[in-house]
Length: 390
Image (cartoon, rainbow, N blue to C red; front, side, top):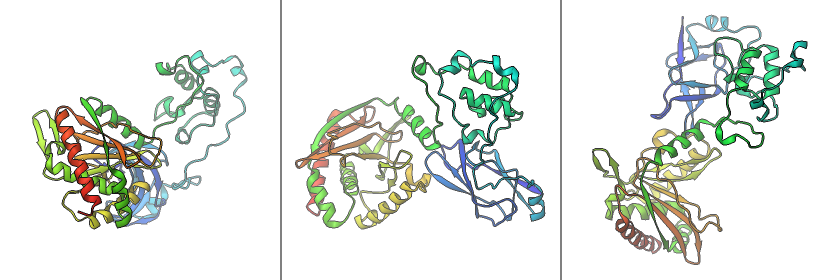
C-alpha cells in the first residue's frame, strides 16, 4: 500500500513550495521524522519529514517544481518491492534536475510558412527551455517551436495533456505586460519563493500611512565600544532601541481595526542581506536579556539567515525593525518600508565624523511627530550610555 506525501505548510504564510532536492531515492528506506526532501518556502529552505516508516516511491515531483500546499509530491510504500515497482527502466535520479533532450533542428516541412506572431517577436531571442519546463510533456515540434518563440512550456497547454504546436502558438500570442510594451526584447525569470514573498509583503505594507523623522546620532562611540566588547554593532543598536522603547511603549504597539495592540515584550528584527535578498531575523526580549546571551543567539541567527536555514519562528513577529547600511560610506541616509506588524523602523546611514544620519519611519496611526522626536532623543541617551559601558 502507498500513501501520499503532501506538500506541507511550513509557515503561516506559505501557499506554495518549490522542491529543491530529494534527499532520499526511490526505493530507499525512510524512518518516521527523517528528512526525505528539501523545499524552498517564502523565506528559507526547509526539510520535508516522513510521517511514518516506509520506502520512498514514485512518481516523484521533479526538482525545481512549484507545488501548492497539500498537493502530492511523492509516496511512501509499505515495502521496498512496491516502491521499486514504480521505478521505470528510464527513471531519472530524483535528486538531480532533469536535463533537456536536444530539440530537432526544424519541424515538419509545413512549418516553413509559420511565422512568429507580432507579440512573440518582441520577446527575448530564443534560448534553451528553462529547467522548470523540462518535466512538461510536449511533442518534439512543440519544443522546437517553444525555443524559437521564447515560450515557457509550463505556461502552454494543460497539466494533464501533452503540449502541441497549437498550444505554443496560443501562449505566444498572450498579450505581454503593459509596462514592457514598446521596449527592447526581454526574458522573464521566475521569482524565487523568497523574492515573491518579499514583494507581496512590501505591497501589503504600502497601505500603511507613514511619516519619517531624521536625526544625527553618535554612532562612532558605539562602534568603538562594540569592538572593545566584541559584540555586533547592530546588536548594540538594537539594545539601545529596545531600552528606548521601554520609555516610549507606543513604538512597540501596532494598529488593529479594534484598537491599539500593546505588546509586553520588545522583539527586534535586524535586516540581513542574503544571496536571495533581505531577511529579518528576530531577537526576542532585547531590552531585558543579558547582552552575552543575545550576542550568542544573534551569531547563530546570522549563520542560519545566510545559509537559508532560518525557520519562520526565527524571522516572524518582530515589534520593531532596524536596517543598517552604514557599512557603505556613500550612503548618507535612506528610509525603509515598515513591514506589517510593527509601528516603526530605524534606518541607519554611514557615520560621518562622529555621527550618522538615522531615519525613523513611523506608522502615523500609532505614533505622531512629537513621539518620534522624543524617541530619538531617548535613543541618543541610550547609545551614549551603552558606549560608556552602562
